Amino acid sequence: MEKKLLLLSILCALILALLMGVIYKYLMNQEYLKEQNNFEEQVEKIIESELLEQDKNQIDQSKRGDNQYNKYYMFHSKTENKNTINELEAQTKAASQQMKGFRSIIISYVDEEKVNDTIVNRNLVTKKYIWDKKAKSFNYSGKVIELSEILLYKNRNEPRLKDIINDEADFLAIKRIVQEQVLNIHASSKYTLDDEEINYVLANDFLTNNSKITIYPNTLEVFFDKEVFGIKKMSISIEKILPFINPKIVSDKDVLKKELDTSKKYVALTFDDGPNDTSTIKLLEKLKKENIKATFFVLGQMVDRNPEVAKQIVREGHEIGSHSYTHPDLTQLHPKEIKEEVLKTDKAVFHATGVLPKIFRPPYGAINGSVAQIIGLPIIQWNVDSEDWKVSNKELIVNKVVQTVEHGSIILIHDIHEISVDSIPDMVNHLRKNGYEFVTVSELLSYSQKPLNQYFGINDNRKFK
Ligand code: NI
Image 1 (tube, rainbow, N blue to C red):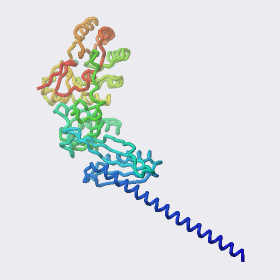
Image 2 (cartoon, protein in one colour):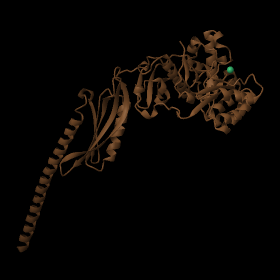
Image 3 (cartoon, helix red, strand yellow):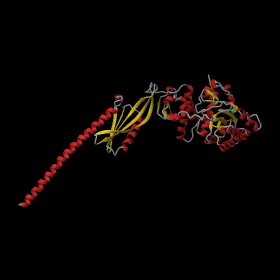
Image 4 (tube, rainbow, N blue to C red):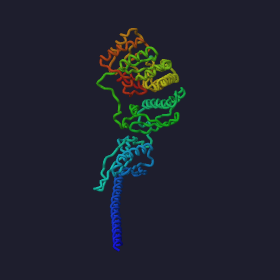
């Protein structure tokens, strides 16, 4: 009897405890729900206030997710560019990963900021908030902003190449860089390019003033008017085309023009009519020993005969320019013949070195506006002539140069004469003693030389009419 009573009371106590447990759990759950509601309300509020400034019509897509205690929200328009969405997603997930140990939210969206009358910057914004349990509210804890792309305000949907350049010279300069890139991409997929393929790239107008572009902080994407070897578009580094575009579209001011040190004196040594397999090689050894980078205006026919030497010129850091194929007076030729001289040299140099000449020196310095137009490259003349071809004494060569040189001079020498090459150590010594440093032609001109212009020195630039 007593046993039964005892059993009954234990049972009662158990039921009571269970009941209390259920009630406690219920109450706690209510508390949790309240907090959860509160949390979600706050999330909504934050999203609301973050997106307040944004055009609601632009935001019609969202993506959300959980990463342990962190929730993330990503907003963008339905028509948003895929690359931008991918970048935004990567940025969001990285932030979410960072916040996963905290009860927190991450909000990401594409923000547009008008810089001036021309430019709109599109930023990828990711903001972080941490839940404060006591205050039952979120604390802002910082943001990540990545500049994603730049739009032209007037042509925000479809900017064209002509919107960011000034003139024909800018276009020709950019075209040359794109041609080289197309050739290199295509060359890397095959063993060697044949002449027809190079002709195709150099003679075809797949890029025009009217080609569509997208501007990113460090690259310009150009869309070709027609496919070339299956390539429809291409990214060019902004740094490479900087002198030829509107500087307003450059967001990274660090890349703006690498000017020479104005407190120093510079000259550019230029060597014409090579390369050959005797004196040119000797010259390269001397330049290496002196740690000097020079510029070689090569003849296409010499490059075809000595491709290994041309390759060595480029490999050792010198600049290579075109000096035509057979050294004619171009002003006496038919336009078709001029084109042939330029194209054959381009092909020879590209085959040998993998680069296209970006500067041109006309034989005898003979040039006019219509020839310059056909050539389509910056014309590089000289203002110091060593007259090495007509003397038989290296002292005379050195004296001529030392007596006529000034800051910014472009010095004409010929690497096909032994005597010229022999004069280099003395010439370099003299010039160094007088405070000169040696740079390539493009370095001397800060890479801003343009087609339809001729350059005699750093401060002597003449535009063709
Ligand atoms: Ni010459």
